[in-house]
Picture (cartoon, rainbow, N blue to C red):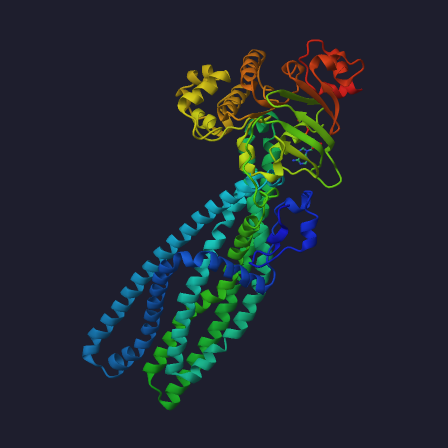
Length: 632
Ligand SMILES: Nc1ncnc2c1ncn2[C@@H]1O[C@H](COP(=O)(O)OP(=O)(O)OP(=O)(O)O)[C@@H](O)[C@H]1O
């Protein structure tokens, strides 16, 4: 299973062609990358709006009812103001009715007050709905992303992803709010005002409404242009933010290599592009204004000219004409906003579809239907004829078979790129094998839940990663229900206690971003403590001691030796010194096992790869990169 390219169509009901599904067994670089794909056709756009409505609308029925009630009352007030102008002119100015001098202004004031209160009410309610939608989608996205396979993160730069999500999440909110406010406020106001106009004067209304069709045509054209520009703008903005974040994260490398100037130039180029895109969008969006103004101005001028002619020549009542013109002028604002609606919706929909693009992705290694919980008796691991490659036709492991006996240590060693880390990744089911199988106590790991499989494994990665939080919290990530005593015990075993207690707040000292305040060796020891506290039957060490100095390494090695007892351990080692005691050593070369045996067996093997390598450096502390040299 692969990440579904179904996100090409974010509307519901879109299915993936079978052919596409079939060739997804092997990950294919192009398919995994997030691209900006948009529904091009009107039907798909409506599908997207309907999906957003269906997923969210029912959650906010009460709030939307309040907002819509406010909008309806507000629209009614607007129409009423136009309506009452007839009385203002006729009663006050023509009939000179004294009582009306007091009552009509009072009515106008009360109408404005009601309009103000309802406008406040709808704005607050809609803002709350919007904020809640943003929060819900942020939660949903994070939960979904953490379920996606590791290859998704290998293919998508994390900073770029974060920046894009940050921009996109507003799309759902804006689509909903724009649709609701436009329909409930602007469309309703317009309908009420047009009714007032027709009631007052059907002929003049006909003249005024002639302005509609040309404006609608023009907006349709502009919206199409805007769609492409918006897509590019969102992507460029995400790249700007991502580049800044990456520069901040890698600031030591940036400074050490004096990369400031070229980096600045790169970001400046992106910023310039983003500025150009924003200007283009503003140009397209605002192009609606002059055209709308001119067409509407023409209609209003026509109405004034014709009604003036009728008043002067035929003596029509100024009151009804005034009410008509007021309604026409008041209708102008909602009509203009409605004209802009499609343009604004374009942007919101581009963002919303990008959110669904991520939400519609499926993990590549989902649990099989009816997957069991893995229970381990002995925790014996077996690779049976495993063939695997990250890309189709490029196998990294070829028909690889070995057994990692229960309670014993199996060391993997070999030249860089041979496939050692891949073996460790496959065992955790970050990827699925293409041929063969991997079993734990005879159970194929594809038949058990990933959660239960991984709960049996403690993993110390090549590059230790620490999360924002305290030292204690970072160790506790190994097992959330670990007691403070267990955490301190693990830290002691990992030879980390000394520096932890020397830190300003001991175990409660914050580690800074990815442990920036700690040395590489200290980070590694915390990572080992995290694995120890997990207390799992399988221990995976990927070059766990690579960042330690000789003293720490000796200490940690002793700790690891203790932790390895009675566990099934697979250790990827780059230094021979760390594996001389291993129960079996597998020399991995070109995705296959070139040699296997204990350290002594392999050293004794005349002309063997391992023996040659060992011979190269009697001290046995050189890195396995030298194996390539040994291989000649
Ligand atoms: N996520 C990935 N996507 C694509 N190719 C990958 C990925 N990870 C590893 N590879 C490729 O797979 C091959 C084996 O890599 P792997 O990391 O397993 O080797 P290794 O023996 O652990 O190397 P090292 O000792 O340098 O860590 C390499 O050619 C590498 O480029």
